Amino acid sequence: MLTPLLSDNRLIERITNGNAKAFDELVKRYEKRLYYFCFHLLQNRENAEDIVQHTFLKFWQNPDAFDTNQKTLFSTWIYQVAKNKCTDHFRKNNRMLLGEDNDLAENIEKTHTATEKSQPDIHYEQQEQYKILQKAINTLEEDARTIVILFHLQNKSQEEVAQIMQMNKRMVEGHLYRARAKMKLFLQEDL
Image 1 (cartoon, rainbow, N blue to C red):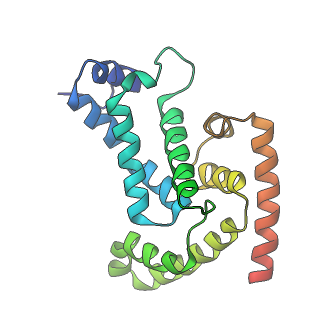
Image 2: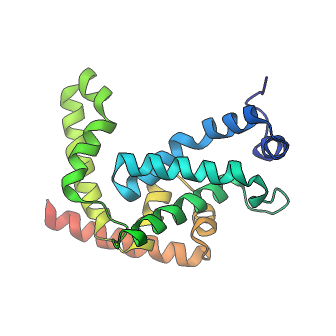
């Protein structure tokens, strides 16, 4: 029986030795967070699920791809892999990293069904706020959009965002500053 206290690196060592239970534990730790990250980038539930599944499949097939001796955390590495898979998905489909507005309401509906049933007024208000926020995020260029999602919606530190985005912290700070300014302008015009 694996305890939740095992570090990611210990689990990865076990996965490298073929331990499927260790892999299941690692998936449980990151699956939901990666799904929401991919969903915010892709704005499509099925595509986000596919990307997360492929991300973990890639790791299961080659756990040595993550070097436990490097300074990068596994969480940072797995986000980087998922981000790259999202980018690849859009390159294959000749689209920018931006969802289709007509899919947004349907995807929000599927994601927030439980809230709607228990508190319909709150759900409607949250849904409207989310739509407005997502439109503001969609005005940003790909890197800025991904940085905003990682920092504000995934609660990653600027250092983690810099590692995931493979850029220095000052660049992340600059993207955040400009993204906030652009979103603020958009929200002022929209409201």
